Amino acid sequence: MPNIAIVGATGAVGQEFLKILAERKFPVEELRLLATKRSSGTKMTWQGKEYEVRETTHDSFKGIDIALFAGGSASTEFAPSAVKNGAVVIDNSSAYRMDPEVPLIVPEVNPEDVKWHNGIIANPNCSTIIMVVALKPINDLAGIKRIVVSTYQAVSGAGKEGIAELEAEVKAWSKGESPYQPEVFPYQIAFNLIPRIDIFQDDDYTKEEWKMVKETQKIFHSDEIKVTATCVRVPVFRSHSESINIETAKKLTIAEVKEALAKAPGVILLDEPSKDTYPMPLETADRDEVFVGRIREDQSIENGINIWVAGDQIRKGAATNAVQIAELLG
Ligand code: 2RA
Image 1: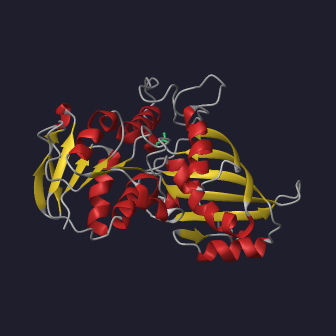
Image 2 (image 1 turned 30 degrees about the vertical axis):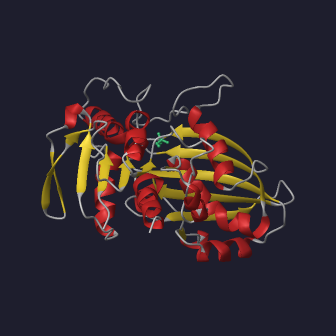
């Protein structure tokens, strides 16, 4: 059984790694919980046993087979040391995603890429993962030419601090207190929408929007798929939603799209307009599947489809996908 290290164990994604390893009965010989100096000494319980979180150092990885990195600057600082010590790193940060030597994997889409890793495997951005799981069966059937996506991203994407900020703002508002001073998001997120996730680039797109373009092309192995994205933070705790317009090379009927999605691994079709049934973040939170509904023909173009997708950002958008990658390592 492998020895596993979790780097960033005390954060939202780190804690979810622990839940998912247990739920999926991932075999673990030794578990090493690592975090920043500030969190070292924290006690965490996993499978009835107490573990003490230790500070991540370059010497933390001796004997480790798989290191799950939750994200942030620890990846650039420590992933190379983990690899030097013989571990395979599965990294949830954006540091290595576009490195041509590093596979970027969503197990339902491109599991074969696990074969060519050189020690680091990147976990894609949450909104990309959720989108490509839903797009894979459509791309297989008809070849996607262009994607226009707008995201509605939960505060969990900014970690447990993002969740705490929304909660604090709602509590302050309900008590009639003066507005909470935001620290995580650039503006109040409660009762608001913020059309900026990650930093702005020179072309005025955000880095989050750029990730959706570049990561989608890398996962599908095709620069021919054109993608344009608008990413928006919404006052939802932990499930991202996305409105996706897809133009395909071949004409598809809506029945064909629904049939393919209903059979697709990792997808749940929730599309019964007459019963008011469609995916919503409250219902998709804490689930591993990507939920798809509101499937309609785009009548403004020749071969167009509109879909609505929702999926838990911390689970399939981060921790579950990473543990599925670990499972591919066999
Ligand atoms: C967000 N994409 O939602 C980020 C998290 N990976 O902010």
